[in-house]
Length: 350
Image (cartoon, rainbow, N blue to C red; front, side, top):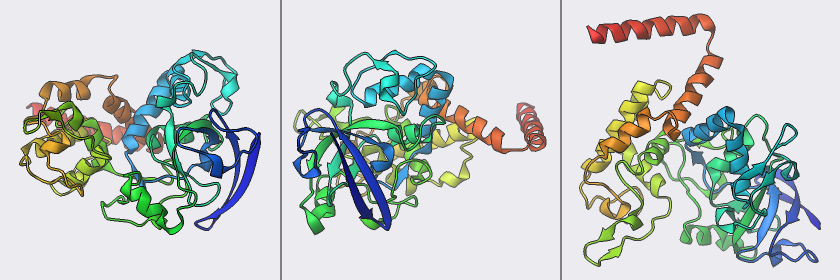
């Protein structure tokens, strides 16, 4: 059964035609009945983000993988709809029609893979708290868009929270209220949709994401020597590290459309992170570098693999950047740039 709700939000009118999935009564499909663990299927334009920034390069890596391998796209669609990997697809398969391709598992059966949403504070509002990058890639890919359906898992229903909604979201660490310049923002500054046209680019965030496993890792993978227990899980881990990087380096000194320059930025960022004193508070958290998974030294082998492996997310992202730049740059200017780069490389070699 479908339920259509019209909601005025931040000056925009959303017509929400919502299909309810597993765990929700089909007899009375309304938001007030949604409980933790229930699933709901909506189109992407019905989702509100809980962050104002994203790493364009994480999305670029996904878009490049879809471009070079259609199966990768359908695998992601199946996974984010709780269906595991893709089983069968064809020429008529379309991301906007879940019935046009077949997943290995029943849709919604793998609930651990579903993106999460919080319901509220008004009827019909769904705030996305995970998977902003992947769902944005569904929005931005050529055959995707606003009508791509996705199954979501309800983590909390705060429909009756009223003015306490954002306080509860902050308390639960399910909103990131920092803008593209690393400054604090208010909930009213959050975009109205996901996707790169609404979410702003944060290059520091890209560095932090790519450097996981190189200069830091998930804290829970390391043991606290004082307690012999794993360190606590940290919400928005890469985001907090991105704030720390802002204080120590200027990302505008690097051209992310040039692989060599981008690789140099990664190397500097990795060194910055490992050189911090272990008791340095990271970002706006109350945790020290060691509690945030800091490595004592850069994992050089992992860094080299990231930069040289053509299948790494970073390499895919840079390939997408390079092709995107070429498409936007006149051929004559491209030729001049290539000649200049070749000349500079020759001078370095000499």
